[in-house]
Structures are given as C-alpha cells and as structure tokens.
Image 1 (cartoon, one colour):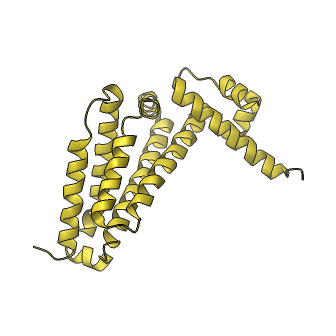
Image 2: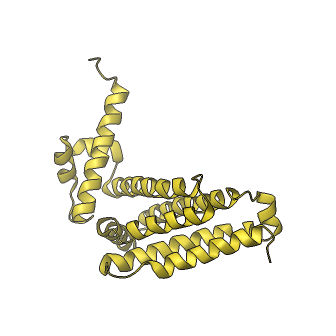
Image 3: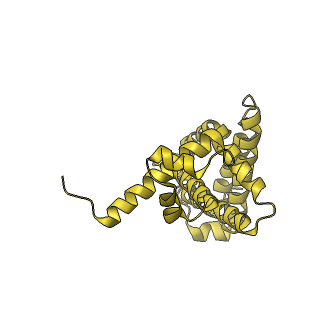
Length: 212
C-alpha cells in the first residue's frame, strides 16, 4: 500500500479530529467537552488539535459548518429533484419533520450562541454560519421555483424574486424556532410550519406563472 503524502496525512488527521469533535460536541455539549477528550477519541495529541484548528471555538464553528452543509445539502437535493412541485414540497416538509428538533445539534447551536454574548469573535462566527445557511435555503427555494419552468425574469416581473431572500430568511428562522421548541418538547407538531411553507411556495408558483 503506497504511503500517504504529507498533505494527505494532514488532511486525514484533520478529518478524523473533526469527526471526533462532532461526536463529542453532539453527545456532551460544548462546555463539557475538552480538547483532550477530542484528541484522545481521535488518537492524536492535543497539539494536533491546535495545529489544525487553532482554538476550541474555531473547531466548534467547523463542526457546525459541516453539520449545516450536510443537512442543507439534503434539503437542496430534495428541492432540485425531478418530481413535481407538490412532491418536492411534501419531501421537504418530511425532511423538516425529521430534522427539526435534533437534540444534540440544537443544544450545541444554543450553547455556542449563549457563549457568544460577550465575545465578538464568536458572534461573528455564528453570524457567518447563519448567513451561509440562509444562502443555501434561498438557493433551494430558487431551484424549486425555476424547476417549475419559471425564469428569473418571470419571478422579477411578478415581484417574487425580490422577496426570495426575505422568504429564505423566514423559512430558516421558522425552522430554527421549531427546532428549539421540539428539542425541549419533541411532541410539538411541525405542521404549523410545514403548512405555512406549503402555502407560500404554492402562492409563489401561482404569482410567478401570472395566475390571478
């Protein structure tokens, strides 16, 4: 078996540390997890964590970024599928039902946000993460609408495209709020949020198509 190059070894080390951090943070939370715990789980030294990520906050940011990428890619793939608009909306609503309220993920987000109250650097990290997530939601929404044969010009003409950024932020905020509440009380239904999303998307399709 050929030996890994230095760059490949570093890439592998980083990936293994990131996965160990993800599992630790999700299971135990941010404050209760030490860099020593993460290093031990991954089979490396604490120095390896610092050399790859610089700090515990930056490591947590990368963990959350990877989770966002994974979850929002799932959502984006559903929005871009070849099925009809009703099927795609149903699939997205089912995804939200499954995803919103994941206790480990939601509580990690909350804990990290609380720690940022008096820390400008953390506030900037969290703001950046949310902006990235919002852009992915807007992209998925745009893909869903243009997938119905609606062009950007049609959406602009009917006033829909101008509001996609606002709607993306609305959907993301609703999902975050639902997730927090369901992490505390899993019995809470997702239907009020999913039903509203369905109505808004159907309205956008109708407006974009010029249907009165």
